[in-house]
Length: 182
Image 1 (cartoon, one colour):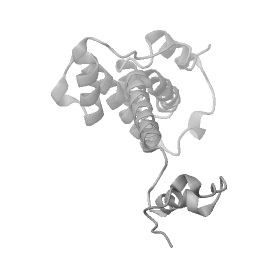
Image 2: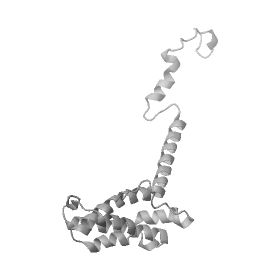
Image 3: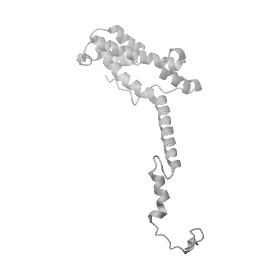
Image 4: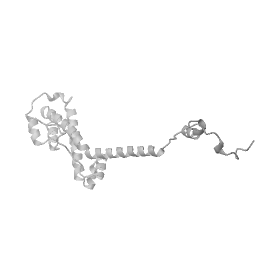
């Protein structure tokens, strides 16, 4: 009998295309934990995911004010109506002074009559809502005037990313704001 090393491998009969011996190395490799055929594709997918999340976060940080402004303006209208009709005129005037409600909107709201007691459970809740809206508007003002030390952490991040470079984020879009109709 001749040695295995002296035999000509081309004289052996060819293996079938799907025989176990032919794909044994591939099967052993795929049985290992964390093995993949093309690891580069997985890392590219992760890089795309991370970059799209980062771009989305930057866009949200830049364009968040028009959406938050519209939300707070709806609350400000309800709080103003409640406070001006059921005690709390000082807080109602603070809402107007914060410029979330314009003087013409104030005059329109003052002419309205209705049952506004359903908006809040009591004057304390309405005053608390008014205070949070006034603090939001002060934060917007501080961001736009560049008072870095008085900003909250998100405001500081927005200041560094946008305002310092000269990109002022938009405050409101009239198409999103709730309308005050007579």
